[in-house]
Image 1 (tube, rainbow, N blue to C red):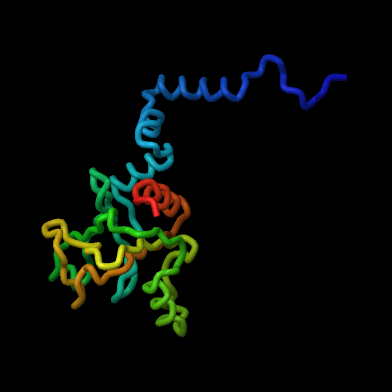
Image 2 (image 1 turned 120 degrees about the vertical axis):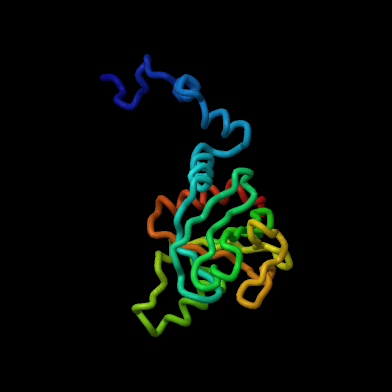
Length: 196
């Protein structure tokens, strides 16, 4: 009786499979294969970066005010993440805000930042004011101390935000409603941020 676990003699080897896959990708234009090999990024990261360049919605938490849905966009040179200012302060401050990814020290997964903790503590008594989004689908970009992490598209110098300079901001905190968007952001940011 033949061994049912033995590999059939005519089945391609694993390396043959990868060769066939590479040939198929190249026949289709080879976009992801060539881009990932030249930049060292995975095809998932490249796809996520392209989606972030097109714009992505997330719930943004700030030092003051209620969390709100915000559209974020990655610059074409992949160096800044920008969004439009909202609310009353958006009328007085530059409309477009941005962060320089080179100033990001660390990507935090979950609600570990002071902004998330403060929001949770302030609203702990009121169940109706629970934080939007899910805790495990939240991230924070933690900035290098003493760097000007934020600016406006018109003026990259320090911007006055709620009485503090932009350099006082320690994190950019966002939350997501679905795992797909969360995963896309994490893949893109891990590929874009400088190594920790």
